[in-house]
Length: 319
Image (cartoon, rainbow, N blue to C red):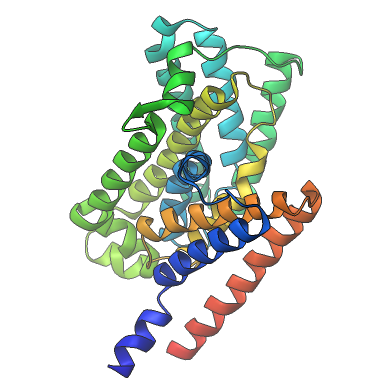
């Protein structure tokens, strides 16, 4: 009984859920009405955007080899700019906008994966370099001026009740979560991701195509980032070339809060969903306290460092 309670109390998913409830209570105390139904739906809408980009980040981190995709912010910006210019306020252009916003970042993600696996460029270096390339291309393309507009149907899907008073993006996020859980726990590709994250050499000896799997997870990271860009422009209505920068660090923290090891090979997307909710609630509470943007960024960074220290100590204790 004691052992079960101790295991539950140290489970990252449980801790994330407890933190979410605590943050809701703190927010309600600071600002009455913070925890009402409509406000929670609004917060979950913001969490969904973070949670979708974190899906790709989750795959990269699970794959090990110190994998972190720093290019997701630029990919989001690219997806938003492409989607906005393709749609330009026209509902009929949404399918083409989806193809451009998710497809092109997917291809760029594959390039990231090839650089990391075939050229042996460290993931941080490769994805940081790709960030610079994408941002430079966006400046040339847009001349630094916001361009493109969301189609009315997309804006309504993201911001307005779709079914039972719930925005469509939350149903999309639930579908993505279901796909991620099935893929990671019930498919050969998912088993391969865990295998290369836990021990790449052993995975190769068992027949896992390590290079192909690693290239694909970076491609999927680009896909989810680009898809996030589509939803971002639906949420905001317009796009600009740095709109995705704010999601880079939170996408990493959400994965870590959810219990995925930065060493790779353990964790899952359900915890990442909880982590995205916790971070969104934390940010909302900080806004309620009227903290500046830089102060919120500092707290996000300190949170990540604290979690890295915690999980590092846990790993050391298990050795």
